[in-house]
View (cartoon, rainbow, N blue to C red):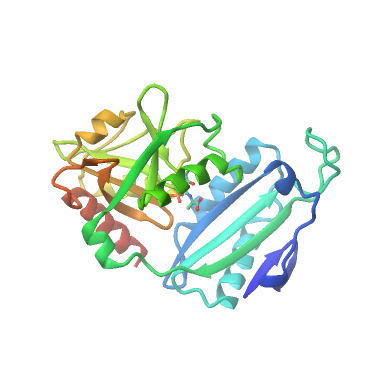
Length: 280
Ligand code: PDD
């Protein structure tokens, strides 16, 4: 396996970053995960735009042009023979003696790019749907920045893993659902409207979420970007989560409550179909 680290292509097993990299010491870095489907990146331009947003919000310069980044990603994807899988891209502020304020002058940002195969979700999982658990959302309030400070997300995912669940929905103090540990949350109400939380500092602007909204609108499926509560979700006809690796994943149980008739719903299945159609 081959990785890209700070301008060099190195053997994955021997790829290292410095001990005083601020990504390591302060989680001072941001990342992207891009799906590769049939050898082609899914929605690359949108991921690069979000990366620029994340970096811009914390004053890390874009370490290379988007075009150069795409070239590196392509090379790493090829070298690792990824047909269906993911690219992982991380940009940290760089290496400097440990001190909280951003170093001045700014160090050279560290860039790591890796890729690995990831088999598509088995049909049996999609037919059955998945279960999720819930947890209080204990994260910071700049979730629009795709920061590598993911400990709360890891704790939420661990809670899901221990319960044998696929995801963990995060619930705000006011009872509303923000998003899941590594995906956005959707419900479908009794009228068949697909509902997802509007963009703000409280959720990551999922690329998959955006694409699904676009596809739904194009197909005349009613969508609503609005805040909803866990209570409302439990009474929904359908539910699903969206993300780079999950695409649109039907949710049939939340904690102990069955959603709808306990099977993946028609709107969810239709949206997933449209998404799969779009990525070929
Ligand atoms: N996670 N919300 C959070 C907190 C996420 O971490 C992610 C993605 C999403 C969905 O965004 P997108 O559709 O752009 O993948 C929403 C990635 C896949 C990860 O951390 O591995």
